Length: 118
Image 1 (cartoon, one colour):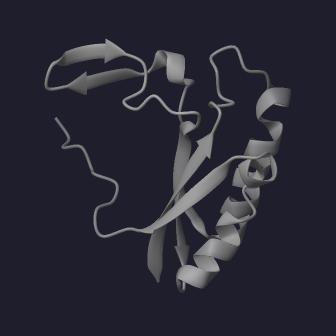
Image 2 (tube, rainbow, N blue to C red):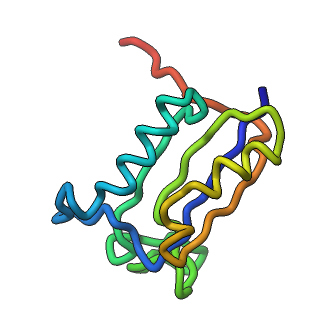
């Protein structure tokens, strides 16, 4: 089955260091639903944009790489039979209902890397 990366765009991440369970509850429930359905393979929530550090050819700066209204707040990889099915799953992300959005892109290659045992 094909794999799709879902990039979550929002005003900022709900997963701040001081976030409470109530702050992240809707997102956690969504992740539990996708996990239970067997479609989500891996997911990562990112911290807020203020904790980002960008590396560029002219040096290192605080903040996200691009100064934009919305930032990538997290991402996950799901399995779906085709793009239409992946889009149907992605539409259920709570950030879409909250005014943000998601970007769905086919995964070309890669996966979880195993660290060598010492």
